[in-house]
Figure 1 (cartoon, each protein chain N blue to C red):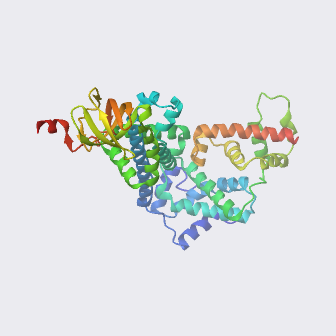
Figure 2 (spheres, each protein chain N blue to C red; figure 1 turned 45 degrees about the vertical axis):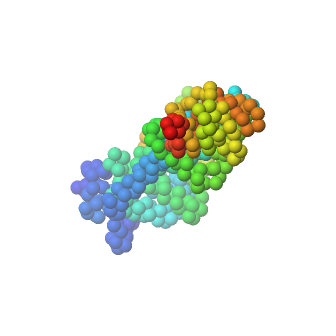
Figure 3 (tube, rainbow over the protein chains, first blue to last red; figure 1 turned 180 degrees about the vertical axis):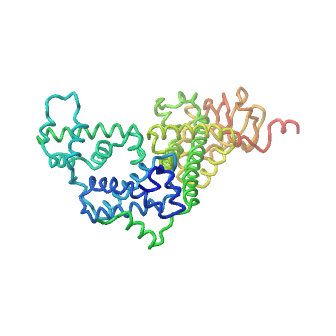
Length: 191
Length: 246
């Protein structure tokens, strides 16, 4: 246990501005989450994902003074991650197509996207993560990312609004459209 | 297993990466808000001139023209300034979205608010002489704008339809004045039974609009005379009353 463990992110930001080493603890808190987020949105290798992660943390460090205390730090760092992934996508033409999902991801996604009142069992046919991955891969980028943020990263509408810099109303609309689109793909391709 | 966060921290130290200064962010925010404010200000100026043009339009005269009401409305709508207003609204929207929390508001809300702000600003500026001055500057210096306005002013070269405009060149008597119309033709105007609008007094050099009836070639009976445009244009050289005193 380290002495910074119980300090909130926002306070750790202030400490990092005074002492570079404190930034390590901030990075440590988000290292796994952001790496997983990169992996969920891209199909880059582990090394490439770590390079993107490095860029994200360096940019976050450079912009620490611009962090708005009214925002959650997690939303802020995810926003930087989102922007960096887009940058990398434009620069290196990353393929944001195939998303690696683990068993837990698969369960989360099916649970969240399938309407609980639907009893026709169409999602029971989504037997493995591979099929979910395929369905997600067929979604437009904006829908895929919003579903990942909502159901895999477990972000609220307001947090997604802060991450993607979109009005909460637009976020809600896009989530609904993404869900509808996901369901359509599942039905169409009998996944 | 490598500690990626530790490696990144080492890189930050090795490359001497430093956080950007607070002032940099304050400056960025200030620039964004300033550009947003300027966009609203310029939008207000555009809407002030648009209001001025709409108020100057002779809505009561459309019946004198052969146009339908729709055609008349299309003629008097100040498209030039409305395009400016929309352009600056676009700027305002773009920069408001780049403020810290601007993205939280729906696009339609931001656009409508910017337009309303510009119209309120325009309403305030309308009470100053700015719209008239600006319009004159554009008329004098921007040929495209001048041509656009001349097209609108063409209705005032319709003596057969009872509309005539020009500059008073001579005050012949209390009952007659002479004007040079927009095509430099000379007319004698019968003003014996005329209502002068807008606290006008006949004076040489005064540009006026006349509503009345064409009597014969180059002779016109005026029923009503109104200022050419706005307050600034109501100056002449010599008033009739002055002449009579002499």
